[in-house]
Length: 347
Image (cartoon, rainbow, N blue to C red; front, top):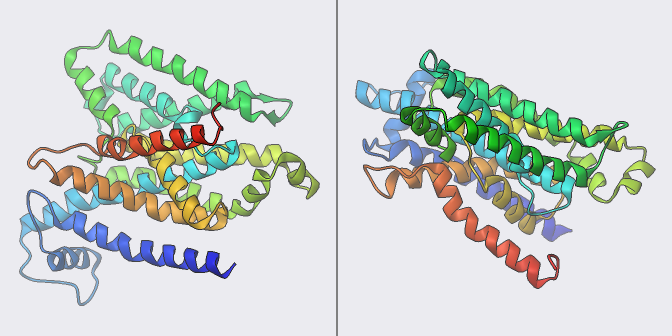
């Protein structure tokens, strides 16, 4: 028991120290390098923090940090935390380490919403129309899947999985159908969103997603103990008086809303919700009261790290963060499949 506690303390201490370091690194580096002390001074000046101001800051440095890089980093922290936490919860619900947020139709619904926004031309009026349409599409997809799954107030996990796959394929076909009638410029705009990225994120995107993401993560932290009991089995959960179907519906709703809020501003970013929870579960175990907050910290750190790496590798070109997470996550996913096959879990 003491070893488990020490591992958890060490993990949270490491994440708490690494997170601000990676954030500061991400803010400081790029095509326009800004010294770390200047970055802190700009943030201190904007937030009116005494002792962190600096009169030698140029307007260009302020614009780069405050209007370009800081919203991008904050969007990455929120999106990474949302995807990792949702992945941990869904892996718990399905009792499957290969489950991720895409399994409940959020990504396919968001893609359909985004392509509708682009096809109708509303994105020309305001940059927030596309994430708004993506959010609506994601939530409608989840509601459809849950509606198909629920019978007499009960949610079947296996039926939920099958419904998610079927609805995702249907929405993907509808998205492809709309794309065939769009001109080349609008197709490029959609593909740019589909790859997933944090470039051109503004404060409006941060304001749009911070409420739903934080509400979702906090609510999931509050029910983490109940999720631990649910994983033991329905009979065990019912024997202690737990409303299994209500809890499962709440977990799905909270995970869906959290994921949708992230996907709507970043586009489709894969493997964060798969890789991060699985790695942390190997380190600190499946206890969700520690796993969920650890996923929030590690997910945000991982996404910001991948985004910063993508900006630096091929300067002045940029590798979008959705590509970076896939390059790192896909080999690990294949490793999981190989490991499961060796254990006979896929035979």
